[in-house]
Length: 267
Image (cartoon, rainbow, N blue to C red):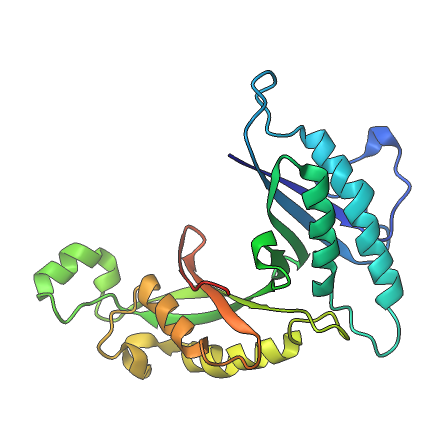
């Protein structure tokens, strides 16, 4: 069984009375301009037969707040120096090592640090020293769901309104996940700007504000379902990273309720 717990916190703590704490919005609360993070841990194990709990979430909170948040705060204070980027990925080895020890006999499944709603680090203890970096992108495009292998009537029955000959549009969201070992000098897996350049050149500029069936060679004969779009984007990015950095996953949201993901094993 797995249990997930999430903290939201600012590195610039506000003095908030205990009876005024809003854990949902974050604690310590954001005061002025400062980094604000989300830290999430997923734990595996067997629930205690007496309590029915895998782990008391108050103890999980205390463990994360007493040990990991100070580590992040110290890293930020030490690394916020001229010429030194705030990499952050190199934080995971010591944080995971501490959690693995403190959680025993439970097992740490994943540890995630969100730098923003669209950019985050994820670490699986089994992959260390490899850490994952994910970023979200968006493009707008029209498509028509139509298979040349099916007759007109069957296409209408299978795809319904999505088979409209003129097509219809979506604001697609794409999450690209890469994996690599943090650079010992910068704490980065790769510069975020470089990741953005690769995704923009290979994906966004090709598909944004296009009719996928009409304007994009990739879908002239391939039905642009969300599954096929995810696979095509994955294939376009798979050989785009050099050195020890590799593509781990691509997830495409067609709507907030519908997504498809393509993954590869990280070795």
